[in-house]
Image 1: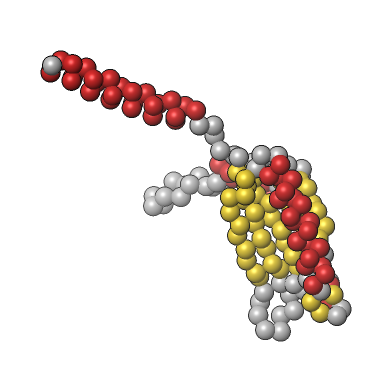
Image 2 (image 1 turned 180 degrees about the vertical axis):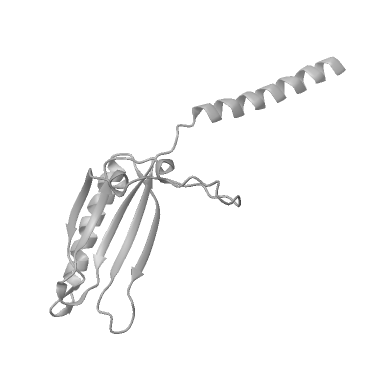
Length: 156
């Protein structure tokens, strides 16, 4: 009787362990892609608004310096700006938030339609919208300059 219980217990433990091993092996690596939208909030329509999506990848480690408390032992990253730049990317024109008459709501609706098209296309290609981050840059009252940035992070 004790021998049967021990065999059953070992079989259950083995089955559970095998289940975890198989699940970890079945997982494919997750891939992320960022699409950035920069919309001008410069009055009179003088700014530029774009949706940007890189077509090439970069390894951040190639451009990273590791710092430590030991003085003088850090190796400075010698990357050139040209090595960091991405030259293969999509740039989609968008309309500015403002024109000579002020805020142009029709432009905002047009930008929304273009961004929705991009999101729908990426979802159809197997991407899932994972995160959206936004930010506004403006120096403040009377500045007359600024951008509204939205980053869409997709995964598959």
